Length: 249
Image (cartoon, rainbow, N blue to C red; front, side, top):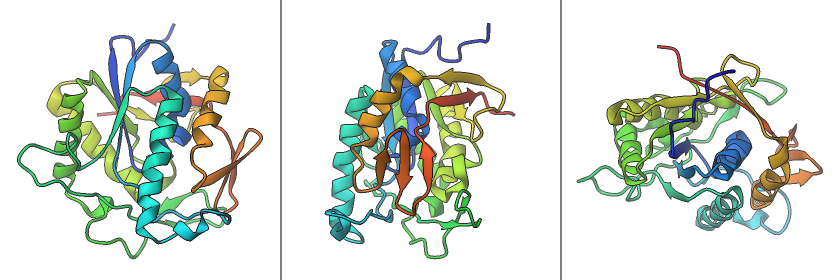
C-alpha cells in the first residue's frame, strides 16, 4: 500500500494563483481531505483581475475594478462548497509578513503557446505589481506568514510546470516550497500530468461537490454536464483524479 502523504497532517494549506484554480486543479482533493476531518485553508495569490468573462449578464465586468470584487465572492462560495476551513489573499494580513505594508499581487495575464490552447506562457504586458514579476523571497515570506496563522502542518501547491504553464502558477512553486522549508513542514506538489509517479487520489464520489463549487464561477466558466467549458471554448472533464508527490531535490 502506498504511503499516505497526508496521514500526519491535521491542517493543510493549499496555495493557488487565481480564484477557480483551487477547484479546477484540486477541488476533489480539498473536498476529500475536508471530508476526512482535516482542516483545509486556501491561500489565493491574486483576484483574477485579468481573466476573461463569458458572454452574458456578467460580461460588463470585464476590465473593470468590480471584476476583482465579484471574483472574491465567487471564491468564498466555492471554498464553502468544498468544505475548506478558511481562505485569504496573498499580501493581505494575515497573509503578509510582519512589518510589511499590505499589498496586492495582481494577475499577470498569459498567452497560449500552442494552437490547441493547452499550454500557456508569460504574456508580454504584465504590470509591475504582477505576481510573476514579484520578488520570490517576498512571496515566500507572505506564504509563510499565512501558514503560521493557520498552523499548517503541510503545504500544497503546483509543480514547477504550474499545471498548464500559466506564469502565476509557475511563480508560486518555488516560494511555496521555500515557505514550507522555512517552517519545517512538508511540501507537496500537484503533478501537472495525473499519471505521473506519486500518490493518486481518485475522487469520483466528490464530482457533485466539485461541480457545486465550479458553479460559483459564473464570471469565468460554464458547466455542461460533467464538462467545464472555458471562455475560449476549451472543454475539459471536471477533474476528479489528482496526483501529489514530494518534489525531487
